Image 1: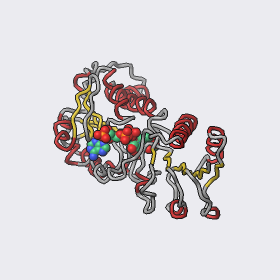
Image 2: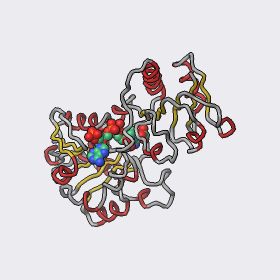
Image 3: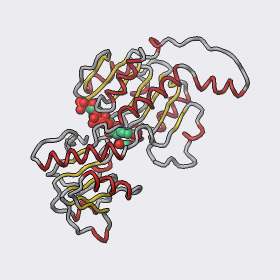
Length: 308
Ligand code: NAP
Ligand code: GLV
């Protein structure tokens, strides 16, 4: 079996891990010089379009991430073979940790205590009532469902929204376009864990974010382009939103002169809320390749029409 790999960094450890998990495979790093070398499988993260232009016999493409927006944007992605994304592979619990941290930091006012500490001020604030902070999770897939479950486990009233709806214990779920407005109106803390598609790009905008309960708070851990950044700045400026925790932004890395860097109501991290874990990911992909080789179907195949 022949496997072409592409990523822009840490390629040595990835090649070694794939070769070790699939010991009968020949594995190589894609380069323009070797573009014509034909593979059975491609394992990639944000590959150049040329990779697919020269591959004629791929049986499947594996994305070493959950989001496939980068792949979907390529002009010559093969349309007749499975495009397979990671399902969870250790990302759901990382995301649940990240979101719980952002949620609790906001609700329990830990940023205020950090400021008080700088002033050597010993002063307790009024206890927060979780009932005043209903949480809404957009996207209830492998990662979003885990995030929603973790918010509910702390006792926050928890709502979810997805295309098709889902039954999750202790979570009130809304579905589809008709469910979006009642979902937003029920929520004060909004968490975005949607895939980036033609339908979801710009979904966090003045119209949707204004429907949140007063003093709403946004946690975006999905993709920067879900958010209309100028709308967020305007809503923060007029006090309609209380703040935002952003792990993703439209232009990554965030340009040095971007207003988010210094905004007092915005907390930023550099796209680290759920990192791809090499060991778990390679084990998952190797297992799926073995299943495909036996003619079995695998989980996590992208529906190209929907874009996720
Ligand atoms: P997933 O399993 O594909 O789940 C996607 C969820 O979004 C599903 O519940 C789906 O609804 C819902 N959805 C999609 N389009 C929708 C629409 N138009 N309206 C309403 N709901 C819609 O994806 P996942 O594995 O949970 O990952 C979600 C996203 O997280 C990824 O695509 C990626 O962009 C992001 N991510 C970010 C990081 C990071 O470090 N920041 C790390 C990993 C992933 P159905 O259930 O009805 O299909
Ligand atoms: C990371 O952002 C991913 O989509 O896995």
